[in-house]
Amino acid sequence: MHSNIRLIMGFMFMYSLLVGYLRSACWKDPTSVFFQNGRAHAAPYSTHRIQQAIQYADLAGTIKRAKSNRTTTSPELCIGIPSVRRDGISYLKSTLGSLQHGLSAKERESIHFVVFLAHIDQKSHPDYDQSWLIAMADRLPSYSDDSERFTLAEFMERDKTHGTKSKFDYSIAMEECMRTGAPYILLVEDDVVFLDGWRHRTMQALDQASTKSWKMGHIDFLYLRLFYYEGLLGWNAESWPIYLGWSVVIVTAVLSLFILPRCYIPATRLYLTYYVFLLILLVFTPLLLVLFFAAGGNCVLPQPPGVHLMPKHVCCGQGLVFPAATVSNELLPLFRNNRWSEVPTDSFIEDYADETGMLRWALTPVVMQHVGGRSSHGVFRGYGKMTPSRIWNFGFEWNDADSLVEEHLRVNDKMV
Image 1 (cartoon, rainbow, N blue to C red):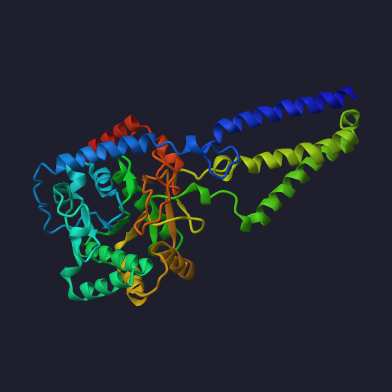
Image 2: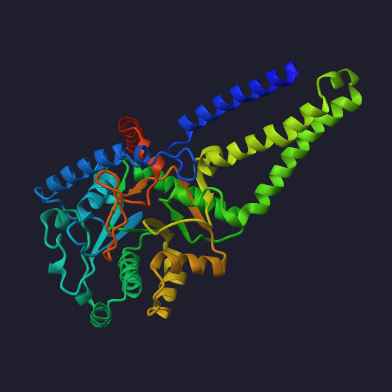
């Protein structure tokens, strides 16, 4: 009996150590019971990056940048940013500033920026005619550039159907980028922040996505995702058969570890009593399984670094890179043929991917953060002063600014 008490006490001690370790390791996993909301929503890197971005944008507004000399060559990447007025706040300056701050002259020349203020009267947008915007954007289209666009936009603004107009604006940004001849098009929401060195990581990831797609027998892919929310990637109810199956495997393994020694090593029967067997099988093992799932899916089974498929449990469309061929052959016809659909843009794209089986890649770690606490259609979705968005990537905030600068400089040195 004393040995059994010692076994129970030993297990309780080990279990408390495990709980303590998981409390320290899993606090930023929103799917974990050890998640610490206030601590995880701190924004050390985003705050730093926003300050850099705004300072850079303000400086850019005072300097007249020479227009691109690009004539025969196309940019490597076109970035489209549809932007609409938000009540009491605008994130566009920090978004655009974070995209450009830290870029070398060669990197900047390889990117074409299209910023679309999506209003019939663009003067109603708080950033209209700002010197920093004029200096940093390569193209500032408007609805009035095309009579058909203008007529449709007038009707949609009167109709005030957010899903319909947002897709229309998204398609205009895609069309403008298609005209540049860039092989890839990045569509970005106007309330995000990019880390220093986002460009070289993104271009490397696109090469990997293309190679992996070819190996899987696909000519191209639908998109590369640069941002995702970990809260959707934990334990999902529809995967319960998988979780149950692995739990049964573990219980079977424990059962085997008890029975086999008793059968083939008689001396173990003195220690592996039936009381110990029941204790391990019915108490210790279930408690360890409960702790495993309580720790959270992102903590115990994190996404591996690099480019990987992410066809499910994702949100939203903050930053997606599309191959130009996919935009031309798939997405633009899709948007035009379903112009009056009220399905939100991100869901619209995901539904199409589900129907066609097109590949959806994601980059880990992400290279951008979603900081918009107020949506473009007036919905408040924030937590507080330093935690502006519920759609948040918790890993992003633990980037080290100095390490990213050093990495970016090393890459730029190799480009020279």
